[in-house]
Image 1 (tube, helix red, strand yellow):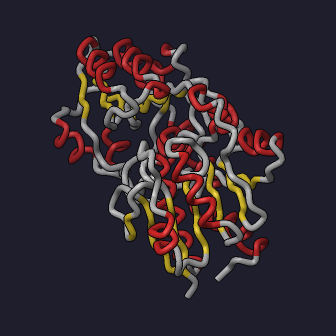
Image 2 (cartoon, rainbow, N blue to C red; image 1 turned 90 degrees about the vertical axis):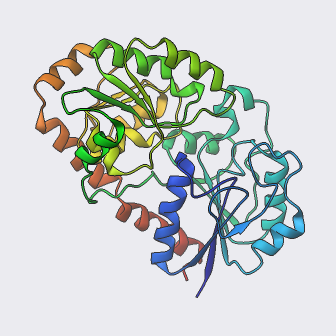
Amino acid sequence: MARGAMLSFRLGLSDGVSVVARLWQDLLTGIGFDMVTVAAEGPVDRVVPGLGIDQPDGPDPDALAAAVADVDLVVVENLCTIPLNLAAARTVARTLAGRPAILHHHDPPWQRERFAAVTELPPRDPAWRHVVINRLTADQFAQRDIEATVIYNGFDTHGPNGDRSAMRAALGVDDPTLLVVHPVRAIARKNIPAAIAVTEQLGGTYWLMGHAEEGYDATLAQLLAEARCPVIHRPVARTPDIYAAADLVVFPSTWEGFGNPPVEAAVWGRPCVVGDYPVAGELAEFGFRWFSPDRLDEVRRFLESPDPELLSQNRAIAQQHFSLDRVRSDLVALLADAGWLP
């Protein structure tokens, strides 16, 4: 059996890249690869120190080479895309030179102001294939003479519904309470002030899912302390239960490479308030009906008198365009074209 490896800074955690990597890992297993995970952090099969975020020395080249020595195909999840560890990206690129590899790109440096000066990522090699998660990024790759295939993130669109009562009981929230969930890490571009403001204006309870990262701890503590609404800051694994418990999903980000929560809200039948980040417009072209943070009167009307047609339309769009079957089909086509099918 052919062996494949998922390689990144961290894997098996609740961040968006880890979630997508796990789905790809499962799909590649179904296609016929014996999959292993390689990272510096998380519950992974092969731990390589130095691959992690903000580990400036990078990994030992021999240790990395040994970790992928028996691997036929390596999928690099964002490590050679966003410059959170340039030393690791350089070592990975050298180790994989001339070998079958898919570089799965979520956040290229030019899409982040603080990384805009970094021009060495993504690395290039004729043996590799590049995959991006939206058309906007594919166009930007083309402007840099890099051919990239678009494979949108996929979701279990036919999975079981969550347990509303159990999750609300775990949170200490009674049924009449308007629970507004913000299923994100706490970082600046997630626009937590806007999410809190939406909750305040709707008279709800704000539930923030993720921990603070990227030095956002003090800012977050102040925002939550000053919020004029009840606040729950409790990380929970990304399951249908969080959407079943919530009455409304908020996602007012200023930038996202994709943005899983609005599609997850569609899958599990919840209305969603979505910010005007560029890729949101690309996703909305499929026909999703989301609400704007600037038009909360429409949200109030919906919450008072839900429109089942809106929710069923969103779910149907997610099932048609963002299913795991669609991702599997895209992956099979990519592997077949490269001659990498097991």
